[in-house]
Figure: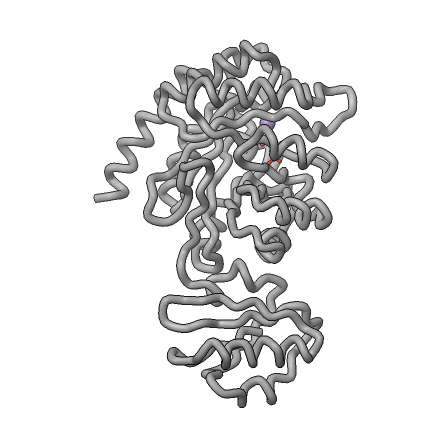
Length: 336
Ligand code: PEP
Ligand code: MN
């Protein structure tokens, strides 16, 4: 439930409402707005009896929200969130942000070469996986901490902030030490313990949609992070599992404008994992920007034929540079 205060409500009145909510065994989260303060009521299992709260001084109205997410909803927080990653802003009113780099960090040389290519082409954030969630146990699992060091070094050498996946709670400390942004992958979108701990770090988070997650489940996962006080979230649509096998996943582009309606959090698109095919990445990147994505995550490898992971969907440095030029032209049309 949301309690909306009158525009002139005093701090004492706000505090009185918070105390009344707490006395009901629930949590209260004040959200100051430019015009008035709202107080989110959290922790209820169902309908909240608001008869006492509604009549407290300073209360304008109570709004019942039955969704499993509130803090990340636009009802609750009408102003769009801009998430900042080491100075790079992602969200409304900013140019789309492109995160690019290899699927996995394979060596210091490969990571640096990829970083130089994506930086030269105009990417703003460097990606690379050190802990890889692979479908089979015999596939390359990532370089772990050594990989994190290579990623950080490549990011520092090129002046790019870095994003990398964290798979387990025990990895959080070291990943926070080396990365500017934590990625929670599709397979971990509903790892609620991990989400809570990621929330507690206060580090910017890239939350990827689970491959069979509904939009409601996706936003509820973001709510876990937000509820720990971490507002620095970027959502990422990366395709969902359907009956279609011609593409790796089915890119659900319609969620982009829908998420923009339903949530204040920024949303980016990963056309690499969504399609699994290099030839489809450029066109779906453009489609994503037209649909309103605040950015893209694209896999780029200096030599995709030799990639240890996801070579078929990785762009070459030249292919990525060409795409970035096309995106710039498209952005000109979108801005005009
Ligand atoms: C990735 O971005 O490296 C990745 C594994 O993506 P996803 O979690 O979307 O499959
Ligand atoms: Mn990949």
